[in-house]
Length: 103
Length: 255
Image (cartoon, rainbow over all chains, first blue to last red):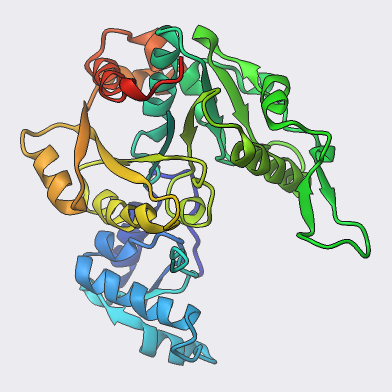
C-alpha cells in the first residue's frame, strides 16, 4: 500500500496520517511514514517528540546545504534519514525544507 | 501599516486578517487586503464571493527580449503599481480593496504569470498610500521565499498545539531574513481555551504575544456558512479580540 494524505492546511492531514500509520503498524504491517510537508511536523503527531522531529529536519536540511550526500536508494534513505517511532513506525523527513536564506 | 499574517495551516490567519482589514477600514482608513494563497480563504472572511475576483491579466508581466540584460521576467513598464491596485483589486465590504493572485480554479499552468505580477505590484507599491494587510498561505514556504518582504510587521498566528508552536518557532526567523529591512515579529494567540494557553504560546515561540483570540463557536459557524465573521457574529469574543488588536496597532495607520 502506498497512501498519500493531502488537503487544506489545518484540516487534519498530519493527524490522520499518523493514526493510519500507527494503526497499520499495530496490526503487524511494516510501515514507513514519510513527511513530505515543507513545514514538517509529522513526528509530533506520531509521538517521536519535538527534538527528534527537529533532528530529522536538520538532517534533511544538511542535504540541501550540500553537507551530506543524498541516499541513492530506498534502504539507505530509510536507514540513514529515518527514525523509529512508537509501534515500530519508521519516520523519515523527505521534503525539501524551506529554510530562510542566510543573511 | 504593512502587516502580514503567517502561521501553520488552520491557525486562523484568514479569519483574523479578514476581520482585521474590515475593522481597520471602518475607521475610515484606506485598506488593501492581499491574498497570496493559491487556495481561496481571505475572500470568504472579508465577505466576498470568490467569483468576483478575477486574476491579474497575464500581460502585466513581460519577458526579457533576446539580447536584453536583467531578470527574465519583470513588471510591464506600462503598469503603475498604484494604478494596478486600483484597477485589479475588487471592492470588499466596508470599502476594503481586495487583491489576490490567481487561484487554482482554472488551468493552473496559466496562473504563475498572474502570481508573479501580484508579487511585483505589491513589492513596488509606494509607501504610505495604503494600509496593507496580507494573508500568506499556511506553513513556511512563501514566508521564507520572499512573499512577505513587503511587510514591516509580521504577525504569526499560533494555536496552543505542539505543531502550531513548532511552526511559530520556525516562522520567527522571518525577523532576520532581510537584514536591511528588519521586521517586527509578534504572535497572535489563536483558539485560546485555557487560562495558561497564552503563556504556553509565549514560551513555546519565544515571542511577544500581542493579542489573544479566544476559541469561539461563532467563528467556526461563520466558516461553516461561508460568511465573514464580522457579518455573522460582530459581537463575538473572537471578533472583539481582533478589534482590540486593531486598536493596539492603530498608531501606524495611513489616514
